[in-house]
Length: 149
Length: 149
DNA sequence: TGTTTAGTTCTGAAGCAACAGAACCAAATA
DNA sequence: TATTTGGTTCTGTTGCTTCAGAACTAAACA
Image (cartoon, rainbow over all chains, first blue to last red; front, side):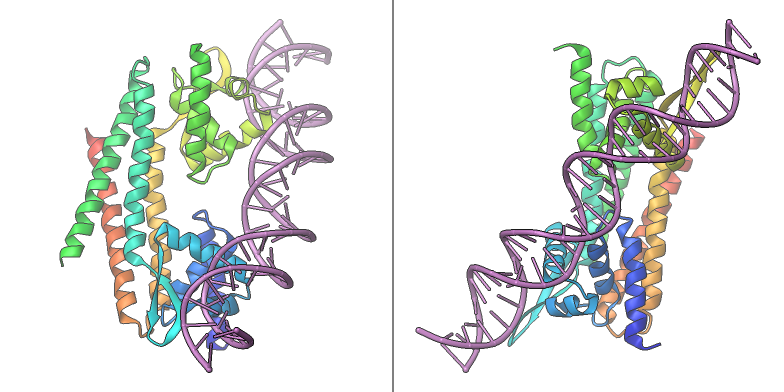
């Protein structure tokens, strides 16, 4: 099988896995393509052509990821095009963001339950909150450690 | 405003927040109800009535959570009904599970990229993988620590 | 100023997810 | 054995998501 055919196959499979994380089929494939391709940056037209997708679909998917911070792009002098690529650092920071927004949700619940009588459940929730906070700290520490080295 | 109306309102709001985590509207509301109600266990009929939802919707949502391990139930002697409640421990373990399945995905990508030339990107991905592994370990450690105390 | 290019926005079609209500089933009770 | 109860499965509807292609826009270039 030809190299490109192998890649296409792999992109489809990985794309489906990525859908499980709450992405649409096209979104999954765009991310998969940028995860797998060598070099890891591709132009808008590259993506459209490789995926056999509509321009609007790719435009929406790419902008979604740019806004989310998991995709970024680079340019080359004398070339108008943008070359999109995965922002590994932004991806990493996304974990921290989702953790802390989860923690806000838990805090909200705990406040609402303040005068409820089910002590055991409340204690469990508080422990879960502590657990998440601990993890968020750990994430922050690890990111810091990296940025220094 | 009456207590139950306040709770209904809160369940709707929290339900919407929970939808953000990839759940359907009904699923969000079921989980929200069990997070907020006092006591924190409720029968099938309670849930149907409180949410003004169809039995099939609630049945599907509850079974989905049971299978996932984030919901469990208790019973009372002389009462056929099951009383559903959030399984905080199962919820916690879910994080570890999702981390490690994410890591499998990354490993798959890294293997595929083994002979690619974009060293920088590959290194970034490897670092992300290390980072996740570190966090998984941390989660496991924290869960162990709890189970002992 | 006219043309090309890179990418966005609009529009409409197709398919699928979410849901309610009814029919159903199996275990417990009478 | 007949009935009730707790819950599941089936069926059809509604409406939303996803998507492609065409029209469009704005910047760069000639």
